[in-house]
Image (cartoon, rainbow, N blue to C red; front, side, top):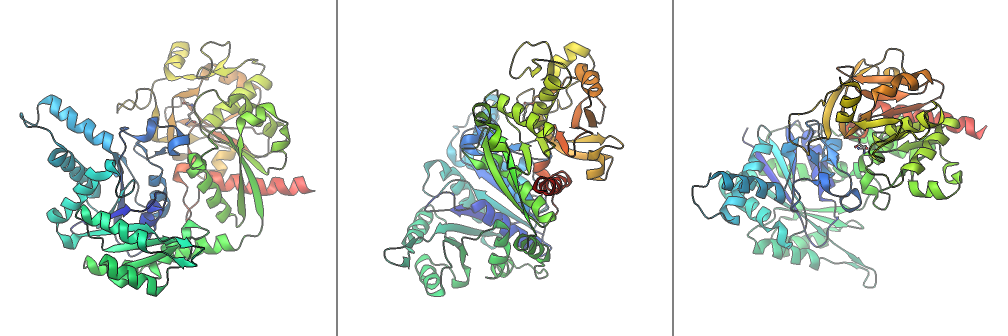
Length: 545
Ligand code: GLN
């Protein structure tokens, strides 16, 4: 089948939820047995978001093949089963990077390099490569129509209709339909202006998704259709809902998928959304609730912990309970009383970089260990647990990570090459791509220890999980840590790197070097998170007694 393209743009304001809308539509199309993928185009100059602060840009999502991508790719994988890769996200910076590299090599044979055609051609090439082999590819353009920086992307998608044919391209535009309290009315004018802006670039939208606080009634949709030159049944109302997982059903109830299949002339079965109905049912019928504390340092922007927070909610669905999340500033733990941890049913320390807040996290891990509170450590959260255990249990005072202190007597967490110099036999596992040199990225196998809690939770001996870190547990100190009661519950396939640990003397204390949150989905959950929430429920019972 020839690939069909759905280009998703946004207007009026940012944060309309283009990513969620695109992913939700993709979920319906997947439920119609179509082979779907999604690409995100980001208009900024960074080559990838890997170097942008999580406080500015939210979480960096890591794909199976080790690409550091926009957090929207996390939504895509939570809504559809197609796995994302480095082909599914690219930035203006990466396009320029490639074009300039070719220019330096002399590939353009003396031509003057220009935005049109060189940059736009490079964009089109990436879109086509990313969509190869799929029936439908949704292409989300970051930013808002009218932004100077997204113009080359919009020009490229305009040209694509000419090149692949209008029958294989569809433009879907998200706009805001605000409700003005004083007038008691929904206002369609911003939508009209936004479409006018899009038309000035040469793009006539086929579908309008009207984001609004309440349902946009049919008379208003008819008005929008008339003024914006869009069929009335292609003006879709997308009101605010309490769960993003309700959006596929909301779009399908307005027959958006039928409209698209007819447009592309596709014959496929009706969408079976029963799995999504199950998700919504579980969400609406909880039998209890737990409160989980995430102790981190990027709490000003909760998007910094997007996948972790979603994975906790998925685990709530699997256990039929509501998960309340308390974001706690690790620096507050350093300075205030531990009372802020006292009403939690479980504690999670997520990934992070740099020293700020680390001592607060160490205090938190100690509190969880000593008080039998379920603890899940992720990446930095595992390194923190190791440091805490070394200092307070394994008789290694001042133990630390070389990320935070360049010299210490007990560098229980250190860089791979530092490990090499100390025991001489640990090698960097992932050398294949130039990704900043020292970061270990992407999906890697982990062998779970027979008899461990981790092995029981996963139900398998061999698992695949995604990584994003530079530092590792320093094997030199392992015998001392194990002697003191720490159990290594999983190792890398070459047995050289500690991937997951636990404390057999504690009801539920598990910490992993990898990031399980990246593979949790609402439909399937993730065993580690499901086990964690179950442990939180158990702990709540004992606490209440
Ligand atoms: N800063 C730590 C490292 O680089 C942990 C990274 C993370 O939590 N993703 O190893």
